Image (cartoon, rainbow, N blue to C red; front, top):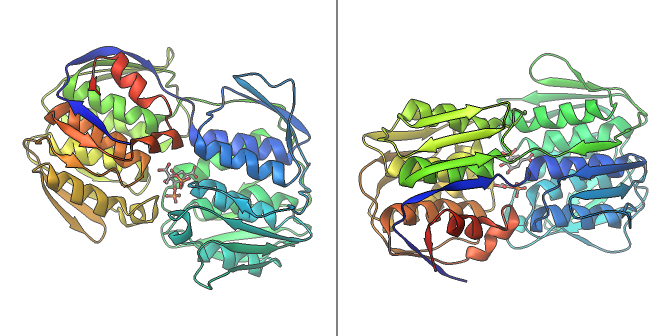
Length: 422
Ligand SMILES: O=C(O)C1=C[C@@H](OP(=O)(O)O)[C@@H](O)[C@H](O)C1
Ligand SMILES: C=C(OP(=O)(O)O)C(=O)O
């Protein structure tokens, strides 16, 4: 589906949608517990994939659930072997977490996904699960889904590469407490996207699991534990809010609510925008970010911890004065798309001077021109290009339906604040 975005002067208030990352984890940890309610969950295509997967393992959504409260009857760390293949659709987080949960089942589980999922890497996780006593392989022997996992994983000592995806480590942290032996996870190289592992550890500990951080790059997980989540309140999503913050800084005046302090790395956008010269304030108590149109200058930003900000930062850089360098970004190539390449191709169509290197983007800011651009079926590419279109005007974006992955109400919110969307 295509939409046309016009140059927009905006002013308004939106509520950040619930966090996708917290929702995935809350639902998974609830399913690994006896019974728990997940309050204010994000209901989107990605989180629905996690719900379907957990139902396949034996969890159920209680009939007393309401719109803003999912009550989950869990399987207490003992998933049943699914009666069918699990399809995670477009969700990498679901694939990784459920691959590890599958290693707790006695039988074999097959996990697949859409075309994007079936070219994303999983080898470090599969190797780790084999070393921990499960049988894990990809059907094409390339580390990509379809993946087959036969349990049970027993625990033990493993080394894992942290440079491709933190989701491998999060997945192991979520499943290893239920192993019959103690597990030591030793991370090799830089742990990219570390804030997501922090979210995982914090949520598991909140649910009563013991996860011992042994220095910066290793974890010890005692065996035969239980998870006792009872209730979890999902916070607002800073990654989704980034598009509204950028819209405010470039096109008018925005207040984004439901943004409270948490372990989310993408809250770093507030300081990044401040460094670029934006007028931005965060009332942490009220959970409100206020940002208004400012003269921005390009800066250098290390995105090792904040990969999902890259499309937003690329658009901010394109509309700023001077040069924006987005660095330490190689892992951003392994998302729904290769986002370094996708943003380079599309912003070039909009007349932006952008250069793609192995692990960074170099953007010489100036003007952005309206164009016909491709959204790559990637929700973050689509939402970032929508903000570029609000600056440039006359911009047509395709595959806009992909916003249902993480922010189903995105275009309704844009219209609400006065953006030209048709
Ligand atoms: O654990 C998570 O919830 C996520 C981790 C990140 O992926 P990587 O750890 O693969 O960088 C991020 O890109 C993704 O949107 C969500
Ligand atoms: C990469 C993302 O999510 P996932 O890895 O779960 O597909 C994302 O939301 O940008």
